[in-house]
Image (tube, rainbow, N blue to C red; front, side):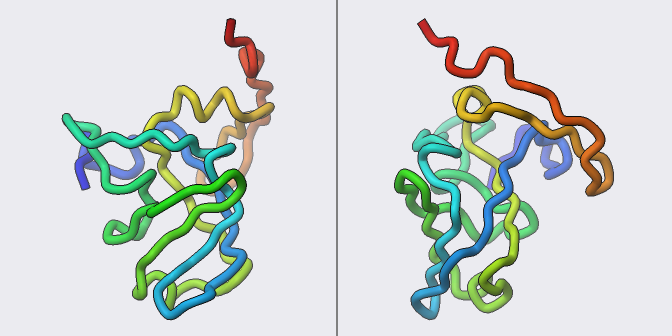
Length: 126
């Protein structure tokens, strides 16, 4: 995994996603997909990542595929650690289009929401 600052905490934004299914010995399905993460990849340069996004705290796992409302992860070790209902934190490959997909952003400090701010530019593409 390449990180521009080589630190997870230098990522300005992340997306929370809930584990909704573990249908095989290595597959996990979560409740956010292309409508929440986009389908962009980053394959070159200092921001290159594997897959369609990273999973915070799980450097050997990545988002393999996304559909409209679901993400698919293939990683036996992570699959064995999580249970249905657990929340995973995704680091999107490209935050700019992701921000445009949400009505609000939540500022978090030490795990606590400290402010909810509207994304006023949401859907303002012309």
